[in-house]
Length: 604
Ligand code: ASP
Picture 1: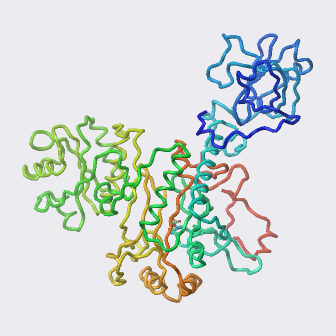
Picture 2: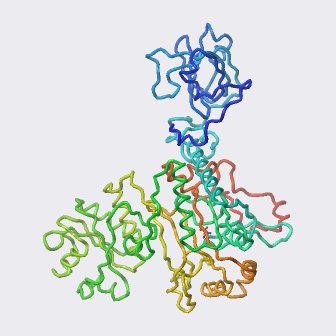
Picture 3: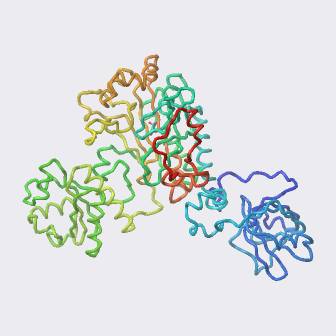
């Protein structure tokens, strides 16, 4: 275990009747001294006359040897010990015979010759082996017995790393004068774009608290209070459709500052990230970090979360095909769509895999996908025959295609071609192993649009949230042109955090609400307290929030955020350990004045 991965330091041990030494500290320098250790039976081996027990605590594993001559009554006990029993054992530390030294274990050069031992607790046979066989236990089973799952070294390291991250955050922000303030969990809806979890009020029947989707409004109120610099490691709740690797409750680092513009917030946060990465064994962060405008990110990578560690950039090809006779392209362009493409480089791909790419593009929402290999001046592609020699030459030129390069094109609405090619670019990077695992790219995405047209609902949505300040003059009659003072920080293609400078003028806030279809009356009813506070001298302010679960997951290399959360829920929001969510007593419902129309009898 590396020192960094170990997380919290090994605390000094005050000797007591249970132990005087950590298992992981029974090292060669203790030879010829006595030690008492306590922990869990990790493994037990019966070697003829001798019994070997690997005893495990948080710091590591030490080998205990029970010998019929020197261990006395404990030898009988050793016979009965089973995996995960809890034991305290004392004896003398001796050097192992050279052929039994275990180089894999830090304590592998020595062992504890047990003189006396006491069984502190019995364990039933665990439902899965603690070490080494995690892959065989289903995640449901691991979550059902999470306290056993957390006995595994990898899981412990994940929590320790998480601790290092939050400790580094607190250390840095404390040094910068940020004040840690708790905000309510029982509150009103905060619009972050998800569904609320509701809690019925017993005393005001028919009324509900909402669990916060974020502390957004409270942190703004704290700026009106004159707190100047606030942070909180806050639990947030979003009842979202279960998307891959999300949790209904998750942890944010939330912060807010007064008398700042976007550059000020970004500057502090760059130093914060550099500090946290340094403390948590992450990549070195070069300051100042790179910045990229939203439009550029979309144009070059098809996403606002670009992974900059490899090329395969998107190219707009519409202009080269304005006059094309090819109906498919033609009608897309006539309908206001785009034709975009990327050059995947010189590749070999069998027809079956190319067909797979087409299905993948369709799965991602495109009607189709054009593939081609540059061959001579033109293409080898089923589509080649529909395009003129000039068009092919121009497409090759724009895509920088050389002999044998694989080209992929999507003709569709801009949002679709971006989403499809943006994802295929990532798929191809995986397929062709284009990412150097030691390369790290952090980038701020800036200069966002303020609103986004929601075609389905035929209304404007806030790209960040309704409290984000417009950049420069704001014309409510032309929402599509409005830019936002917003910024997201992206690490290797994953958003780590995002925030903005806020609106601090109640009139601008009302105007933004109106664009979002929130009329003055509704605004008053839902956010009257914020609008009112903004009338009592609100300083210019801005902030950001980070997903801590995601940051720790990325730093630890874990596959899912569930591996760095002590007690997570399954992908469907169920907790196999406690059985939550669970039905409640009729009497409890009655007390709350709540009637359930269609109880979900399946439970989950
Ligand atoms: N409240 C925002 C969020 O939770 C972050 C911010 O604007 O500070 O995403």
